[in-house]
Length: 490
Image (cartoon, rainbow, N blue to C red; front, side, top):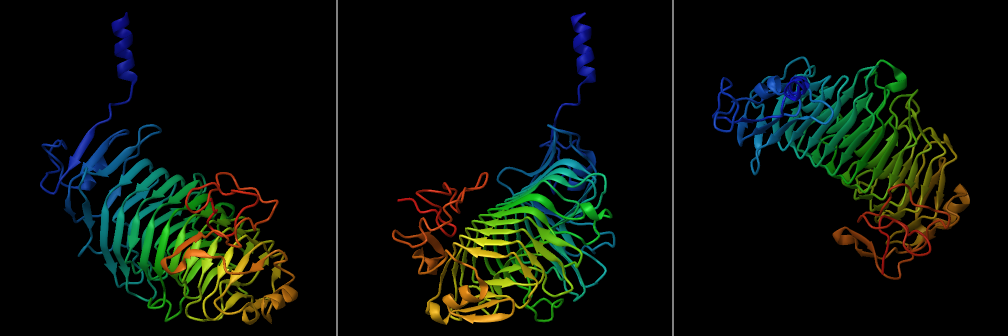
């Protein structure tokens, strides 16, 4: 009897997980073993079962891969670089198809891990074609993209679109969820009207962490809503996720033919997103450092938190809030706290460190450090649709005097910090003083002993769930929270 019970259990149990191998020297008619590998990644993408792993050997694979298999809970399917090797999927001379396929394409699949690939060289000059490094769409869930490098994805037409990583939640019944994009490098792209890394539509429960995004000619990391990606408008927005520990630099549309010389590329952009936590990122030399807004008149960016980030040397502004013109959407109830903004608006546009645009309601800007460049402009506000905005417990400083500093509140200009407080009614508890960074020239924004930013935060402040400073240290040390990204510890 015991024998038959054991046999029944074995028959009822799922298949055992197996390891397979791919090599440029292999053959898809092989067994897929280490000694007898397959030749293409696509063979694995058609064959693997839940729990299986394929290890891809070094070499160049000239193919577009569509993953047609799914894992299960506790038994994901893994596509991984062989230990110590770096396989390359290269689309040089492969035409971009008309059906939005990518170097790696995933639609309506789940429980997958993609790790350790170089994806490169997928280009078009045709506006209707859309090259992409990794494209996830439909009702996908439990997908992990880890430690991949994506480069050379390009559109050269002024009306074109291209992506490094694109996640499009198009289903009304199943959001893209349990998504991890971690440790990837996305660089040297020409994305036209689109973004380097984009989460768009019905996407929720995501973590975009510890990626490096740089040297691209449009937006770095974007969380997008209200574009009609999901037919259900109530679900048509990226929401309830985390953007943490990413480093984003040299993001500019200035030479992008789609923008005709306009510098408008964000390092990190919440465009119609909701409840996204953006923390401990470093953004430098973007056109706009971080923007919380909506490009669609009936849409909004709501309840997002920007905390403990460094934003420096951006070309137009460090922080943008609100729709960029009166035909855009709103920014509602967003919180900007404990960030360090350093010498932004390097093109001297007059936008300064903070640009307040159209349709702002109940947003809070507190406990930040704003260190301006030589032009000495801190806040610009060329719109009057600004209600409930609060600035307080901030530290401002410029190499020039406080009395010469430039500000604007609901189209009313003010000169000097005292003039700003009078015109705006803001920053009652804020200071204008040198925060005493360890070495701003070396981008070291730790506070020196005696900094006026130490213990200068709101006495009622309590750190948010899981909140730590830029170094991963306790957020409140001492009597009160410090201003900016660093919590000084003697």
